[in-house]
Image 1 (tube, rainbow, N blue to C red):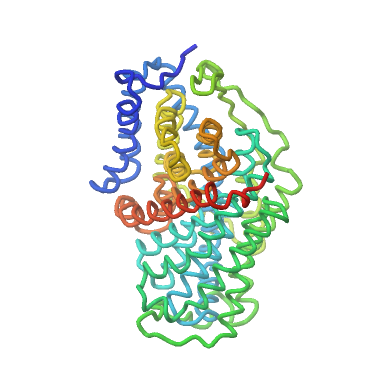
Image 2: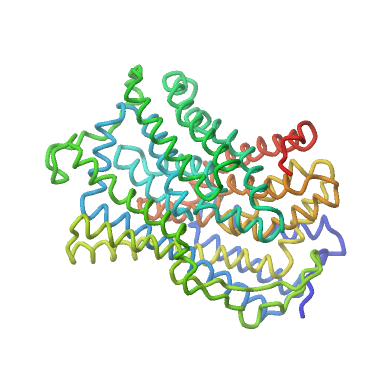
Amino acid sequence: MFRQLVTPVADSLPMSFVVAALPIVVVLFLLGIVRRPAWQASIAGVLVALALATGVWQMPVGLALNSIAAGATFAAWPVMWIVLNALLLYNVSVTSGSFDAFSGWMVRHLPNDRRVALIVIGFSFGCLLEGVAGFGTPIAITSALLVTLGFPAIEAIVFTLMFNTAPVAFGALGSPITTLSAVTQLHDVSLAAMVGRQLPLIALLLPFYVIAVYGGVRALRGVWPVLLVAGGSFAVMQFLSSNFLGYALTDVLSSLASLLCTLVFVKLWRMPADPAFALDAPVHPAGTDGLVPGTSASGWKGWLPWLVLSATVILWVHLKINTIGEMKVEWPGLHERIFITTYGRAYGAIWSFQPLATGTAILVATIITALLLRLSPGQLATAIRRTLLQLRLPLATTMTIIGLAYLMNYSGMAYTLGIGVASAGPLFPLVSAFLGWLAVFLSGSDTSGNALFGNLQVVAARQLDLNPVLMAATNASGGVLGKMVSPQNISTGTSTTDCRGQEGKILARTFKHSIFLTLILGCLVMVQQYVVPWIIPS
């Protein structure tokens, strides 16, 4: 059995920490500075990590390659299975004219203002998609919709990435919280309640922050009531649902509350017009979607795919259809072949294969949508072909970057980084948020990030006499802010636009905001630990 090394470089934690960080530095350097495509940066990161894992951390080559294979398989199923079917649903809506109808509905029913379009589509609607699908698909779909409304593609992706932070900890019907509870042995209700006492503050701030980044103080002056309604309704429902109603539907309820409240508000409130922020997209002429603009039928055609998706996934998970036929596969040659020195136990490698997982639910929603929209076989073939072309690079990037995450986990490099961060002592609540950020940057998923560092947060908390529920919850909350810079998330987000290969430019624009918002969260955690500890649920 291979025993992980924690300080293999001169028996020094600081030196080992610096060396363990090299694969991440390489990925960030190639993406953000050299501006290479995400798949190239990810491959380079894997090669550096492989050399370090085998040469410095003394991991057998066979185990190292096997861990990469396990990560790549997890990336293919269930992660990219979800993305594949979500993109297919998007292409079905495009091919059928439903997407044009949706875009036209937005033009006709929203004020002629790009700031409002960003809030309604990027924030409220994007959060709904995150709640039922996740894994980058909200970025792909909402950015494409914003492009049809006249936004430059890179701007659309950057701002939707920033908005995608608010719902992530409860995404995919609460999967990150469920996983966090499983790895930490802490009560899921307490963890969800604690996350629900952190992220609502970020959700309330986020619309103001993003619009300020988009258009400065002038942009805020004109639409601050809309931002307050959108962020406030989301934040209130996120708090209520996570603390009192059940965390599985937190994102769905919060995003629906935000969407409905915002749409009603912009109908009732006379918003001052500002030509500087007028939409560039023309109003759709009569008959472009086969229906008369402004009629209820046109609106239903546009909304149909997303309503069917939401209803299908919610019912699917509520009825536990996803668990039918589930198989727990012990990964050959890797399961319990590695000893985690930090935790004092063998490292399991179990691939949970669910043939009827969330991705299959989205496929069913896509088939129902295609039937309701009366898609012809030729149109369906076109949608499938377009989806496969769009998925090539995101698939390669996701399989590579999650392979990198698995390699760093099983070799011990990730635990060297975690223990290095945990040595911050009284400042650990501040850096705890960055530990969650790091986990999601690597894996692209808050669920995977909680599986990686959730228990490490608890171990460090108990060593430092900090609250373990707070630290574990902070891993999930910090992880949401790493989503906007995750190569997997960015790569999937570019799949529906002409920005493929420009992931480095996108990362360069989101990175500083990701770090700044994580710092704000870290300061909040410091206050919760040392100033108002009574706010932490038992």
